[in-house]
Length: 307
Image (cartoon, rainbow, N blue to C red; front, side):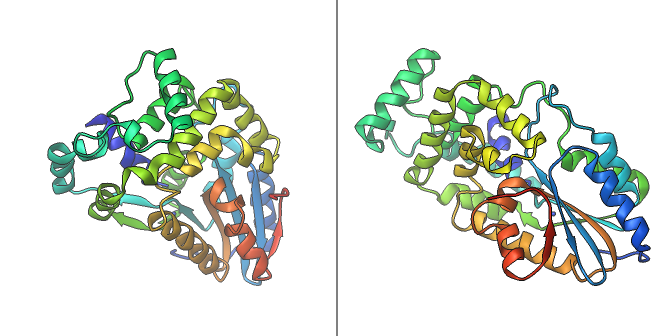
């Protein structure tokens, strides 16, 4: 059950306007937020300011950034936008309990060799032997997540994510919080159940790339994030693997999540005062992503180069 809920947690990736602030106050919020060290982009609009914080998950504790500065900026913002989240019902939980095998195992009595080409299978067998694992019957998605989690340990000894920092600060300061969307748990589960094993092969290949690259890529990814080297973050094997896996690589759910973010930010651009949004970096900076789309619409965007 714990493994199954990992899938749903990955889906969790987000406005009640208050009184408009004076320009000097908006500038102060921007400066304070930027002092946190997180990469961000500022969109100036005729009625206010939108701050887009580019988030990567699982930042190592050794990464030198200042969450307290982001908290300060959040407390004086007019509104906050956080990532989409699934709404899980008791029925969804029972469904996972009794049908979860569909997510953790390959269908029927098939094995990895029924889907992978010779080179892919050889790589998988080599990694399985090196780490004393048996991946033959395990779903490719679960295998990918286990590789990243257990072999790279990318989610061990991590600091709070930017979205958690902003959420906690907004709740304490009574700042309005909007989610990019609320996804029905039933729809998320259906999306997972309907995916064929072949759909997760790119995720598996990317995960093997990341594991073979070595554990140093975890620190490198975070260091480049902190130094605002956005293309380097996007090219990091770990970030590439996360982007190649569900939900982001899913044609239906991934596309919906990206469209939702563009719509929410466009709405925020018409609001008065300052909006602070924490957005997955891959959604912001990928080719054709949110920043590219906002740029194409003629928005004035200030921040580090993203391509």
